[in-house]
Amino acid sequence: MIVTIPQGRAFRWTFRAYIALFFIYLALPLVTVCVFAFNDSVFPSLPWEGFTWDWFFGSEAPRIGVFHERPILRSIVTSGVVAFWVSLLSVAVGTCNAFLFVRHDFPGKGFLYILMLLPLIIPGIILGISILVFSSAIANTLEDATGLWFDALRPGLLLVILGQFSFITTFATLVISARLQKFDTSLEEAALNLGATKWGAIRQITLPFLAPAMLAAGVVAVLMSFENFNTTLMLVGSDAPLTVTMFDRLKLGSTPVLNAVSLLLIVASAVLGLASLLLRKDD
Image 1: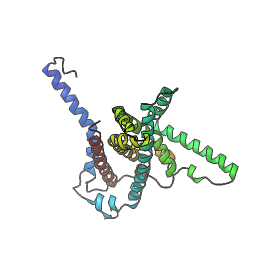
Image 2: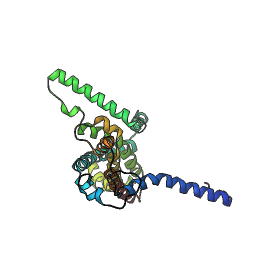
Image 3: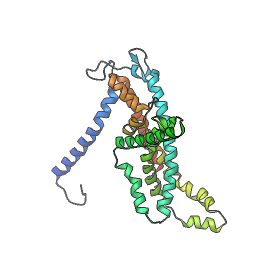
Image 4: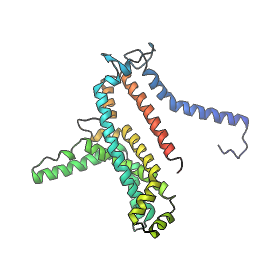
């Protein structure tokens, strides 16, 4: 709605109702998941049987809570390891990409920038299948040539990390580039005039300026890594991250323990998302 154009009272109330219904539509599934995490029933559905903490802290079957569910806890640790390496690689490469695209002009820059953005529009499952086929072809070729087994090129955590990194690094690049474009290069020139080396000026002036954006990009990378499913499903091995473990559990029959896991993820994502916004408030 364009606020500068006079609107009738009926239109304003209709618009407000539409906005309210829109946010209710978005929030209602999440609220439902959170509520049934406390339902005193072995089924995550109506009727409501009462309030319980069993799906968080229960230790006896069939009411084993998330904090006593070893497969779930193991998958959370696996997702944490994957998210750590994905965020580390994405921020490092994204920072280099930001300097490349913001500071330098070279033939084919526009084409290279488009290639960087392509993973954002390619479906995750297609991206995962492509990486799996490519890595398997390389592994088969090397094994035929050397007779050795290249386990790292087979489905497993390494491919999961590389698969998520292939598109999450694009988001990191965009976040850090937006911050770098606001940097006053005369600060670097002043440091160089005072005797600093090029790397010294970047390390002591530019990188501290980029630190909030780098941290925010890291938070975004962690969140995207934790919630990724399509690409991860195509590349996962025996150590399954959380999203794949929850999917496998759903195929066997859902219990409110998955609602409890979802509630914890919602809370953690909200906290990290708020931290990301606070880190970028000066951008």
